[in-house]
Image (cartoon, rainbow, N blue to C red; front, side, top):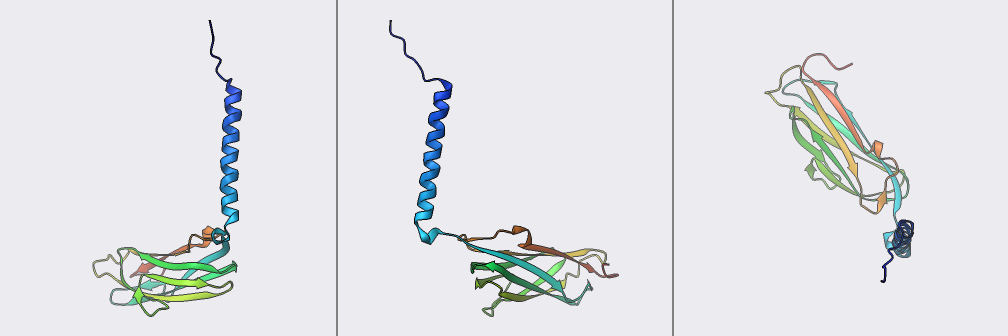
Length: 167
């Protein structure tokens, strides 16, 4: 009588570990062998400052949204986007290419360079006087750029719509 012997559990684990290590090594070698895939590092940051603290119907607010590359490398495929709550009427921002939109393609941004886009918003007339207007600005970049600090890639601000300014 012939008995088939199955590999032990520890032998299976060893084989699976070797397979996983070989796959990781092959992937790593493929990434490092092609310089076109090599990533650059650029810490992009966005800030947003409004020109007023409170806003009433019929008036507008202008947000200066500034994107800065803190380096150390050039950032490619840089975009900035502003999203707003329903409390606002969005008139858009004037992008560097002279288009007016909520989304701007900034292209490349050198280390230490910054770009400011002015976004203009108004109050919806149906809005209650005690409501807040919320605006969120975010910055993004191409896949080949690694941003080591993602916490400064977006900013949120609130504006009191009617009534007293926020303190």
